[in-house]
Amino acid sequence: MREYRLSDLAASMILGSSLAASSATQPVFGAIADRRPAPWLLWGGVLLGAIATAATAGAGSYPVLLGLIIVAGLGVAGYHPEAARVANRLAAERPASGLAWFMVGGNAGSAAGPLLAALTIPFMGLNAVLVFLIPAAIAAGFLWVNRPRLQPVVGHEHHTGPRPPAHVPGTLLLLVVTTLRTWSMFVMMALMPLVLTQERHMSERTGALSVFGFAAAGAVGTVVGARISDRVGPRRMLTLTMPVAAPFVAASVLLPTFAGIAAMAAAGFVILGSFSVTVALAQEYLPSRLALAAGLMIGFGAIGSAPPGLALFGWLADETSRQTALVTLAALPVIAGLLASLLPPPRPATA
Image (cartoon, rainbow, N blue to C red; front, side, top):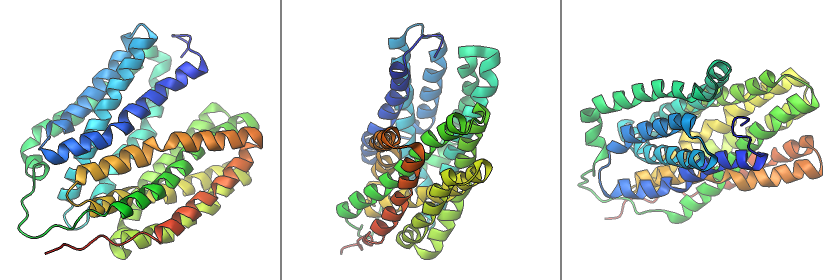
């Protein structure tokens, strides 16, 4: 943030504010959307996030910049719960697969966004954020044009039979499993580029490519994991696959550079393979609150729970070494798999 001459703390607050705005309010938007139809959140959330992000190019001051970032985060928060409910309903009897394809777009955007920014910033400076208006306008326009197709699945569904009751204990335990996965993901994405650039003296581009490989492999893993879940069930899928990530997490820092980058991509494939599965299972635990379930899993579980894990393993890296922190991190997927084995089945419908 050379243009604003920000300290590291001030710069980190930009990311922190975005994460807080988008994660903390997603369950709120989910609860609102479950009470009344809110199809406008689909195209409106995309448009608000893009316009606020583009407006940061002319913010002029740090407080205005921070405010615009928060507004953009609210746009993201409004979109996701409603969109996840639509994906669930459109997928019919295969919600994990439907949500997987929905989340592939998010993972692909997370991987492509930094690359697009890196390509345009040298030529456009802060105005590079204006480029993101183009895909956002296309997406918002598509959602607007297809309102009639989406409207039937975003309103209150009419059920002639009994509905299963909410399973709060199962939802809470699933949040713990999701949090451990989130810590594994964010800590790897934070520490591995530092290992590559500062300890192994690789280029900044190599560090960025390692994160891109992690996210891109995760996008593929999301689809594969959903198919596994459709075959064996979400609880068994989580129990069997989460521990598989552990050796890849450790190998990413223990192996030579390029083998380690490959191991990091493999870790992303496995870790993010359960992304849609946890959202679909939460919606089974909260069958009358589909948007709220998505807001809890995507907002709090997948994003909002990250800061404590980043702080804990960042402290461990400072006190010992980054290698020790990452090898220790490998224990988290194993613990997540063990806890997943304790997840209860969704409650059956009551007469």
